[in-house]
Figure (cartoon, rainbow, N blue to C red):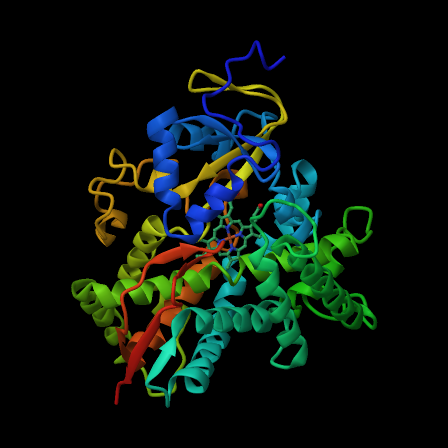
Length: 454
Ligand code: HEM
């Protein structure tokens, strides 16, 4: 029984709700980091609480990350997201799967996003970014960055991965997603007035639209009609066969994972790019170095000539700026696992069945790992410097679940920054701060004045 176990300290609070509302409140007012820091000051590095309906142990630091996020003892930890996330994304989405199921579905995504396909995406991605700037930036004196970057990254993923081009279908999907995202971190109480309820409804609608797309795409599909390389991701997932020559992914799995990819694939990169523009506006030295890197690339191109994979591979300093931005402001605050048996960690027992909560900011702001942690210092990610200790940079998670969209996000970020910085200068129009609602954003969405370069 848990009475005999050495449970971590900390109150469990009101059943079911516990500390959820207090944490969500802190996230909405730019103090989630302090909220966790205060917990650590009060209860130590490992503590218990109730989050989103479940008894939960909060863990942080390199050792805990190693045990929980990166691998964990075989069979001790599994993935299980909080109830709201699971219901909204669909229960067959990758973050819910484990073992062979996880390998099968993840393998398909990793194959589709392999470097060879990314190479083929550069020109099209560059085209999307230029079209976006022509439509929404040129001709304006002031723009609000955060919503525009969501539009851009969603358009890119729809057109490059799913073959869903501009039009009414794409519009209705993005409308659903706006509502879905609002409820992904919430106490799962399904009453008409809750965010959770609205999100569930939006999710049902999005699933319906995607089922229809899947049907249209695959109705007349002939076997061996297309080479894998020409298929969009929807058709590809449908056409994968297992060793008995049967369809490897169910319809439900295809739909739930497209939803996962559509959200994970745009609502994170858009935040990174938005925050980089903010960082660049505030750090003239960093700005100058990034600009120089891109001007050296642009100078060797004819006007109108698209970027290539080789150009992108030269944007090394810009990627360090991105990594440092992700260290200070990780778009994904943290995640959840579940203990499959009693786990001993740091002198405490995490009981079987309990939820485990890991959070990136606490590790990223640990002064023993990143000296002078509040300072923006891209050279921390310089390979010639002292390397970052293992299990300490977790903006993309780690281990067998590490973000499979890492290279896609990198490519998209670098291509977008290239065209932004070579076509515009910009200035912040007001003081702001960051909130998590539940995804990270500057509180006013980052309004800026823009000046096109001649
Ligand atoms: C800056 C951009 C991004 C950040 C910061 C980010 C971060 C993360 C994090 C923290 C996780 C959880 C890892 C874990 O539980 O250990 C994750 C998982 C995932 N991400 Fe990303 N991501 C980004 C972009 C993308 C993109 C562009 C895609 C798709 C094209 C994507 C698809 C996924 C998927 C499918 C998973 C689930 C993997 C699994 O459970 O095996 N992400 N990401």
